[in-house]
Length: 89
Length: 75
Image 1 (tube, rainbow over the protein chains, first blue to last red):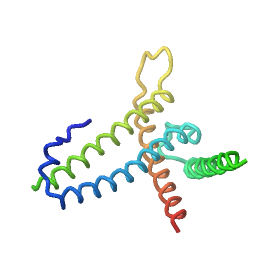
Image 2 (spheres, one colour):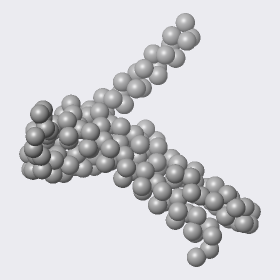
Image 3 (tube, one colour):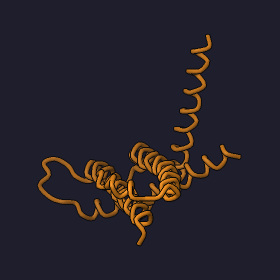
């Protein structure tokens, strides 16, 4: 997946190099969010959706998906805080 | 097209491929698991199609929820 040619980048003037770097930083943050969305969907879908054959998600299943993401993030924050506290002690 | 624009376009396309691949891998795993059963003597296309549609809806809910959460935390 590394078909970007380094010589193409070397040809750019400094202004363009700077712009490309900014662009890549932006795309990188967006892609991190995308990968988290993939991960949360992969984790939460099997937990929340019982009838995959239904024509659409039930309102309970939709609510469960949103709750699952929020609880996962709450747990993540709690774990970060918990670890910080245990390091301090 | 300037080479800067071409590079940006190339990066965008490669990321789009990564995201499509991720979606295909994950939904194939989950939907095959939920729709296909031993001894795997027949397909279950109806279930696979419905499962994929539901997976995409679920993906959109996750995306909305996560982005709202990020916005909240930046307030």
